[in-house]
Image 1 (cartoon, rainbow, N blue to C red):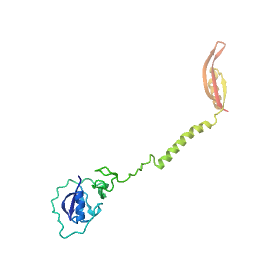
Image 2: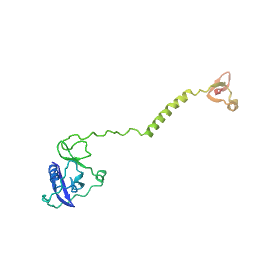
Image 3: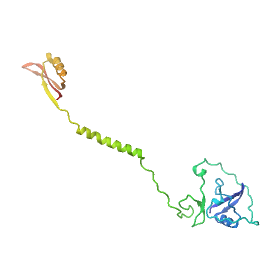
Image 4: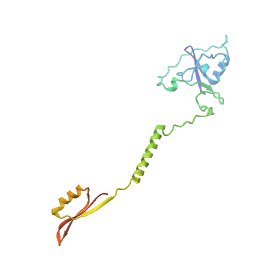
Length: 202
């Protein structure tokens, strides 16, 4: 069963169960300004705990006997939850004290509120636009290359002899011809020559 520590003006008054805490609040022994904690590290005012009904203090109320506090372990690094302690409330099913941020009671499992289901988006807006742009560009390049007209060529075949080979290459190059194919040709009826194919745009 869960227990709670109570202190008043810096003095530890004792350790009590949730039922004892409610009874002492109703009898006036527990005051709204008293501090309550479950681990002696995070303290909240008794008035911040839900489910407690306080009565005015009575003159003959039984007083808490201060007890010496046990040495506390080194405090953990500050976290977001430590900076803003959660308020406590009473579970309607088992009457145990639980955090007001809990979606279900850790003691009996009773549901308290519906959890928010907000999943993070897979892509940010900027990333989504960048992906769409890349897809469009990737689809556009093949389309442009497909609709671009193919160049038209004209071809010429030449068979210069060895003595006129260099002159023929210079003449064809100056006229814009590009050598495509060449081979050495020999015949018993004529001098050795070259068979060459040239092309240039129309």
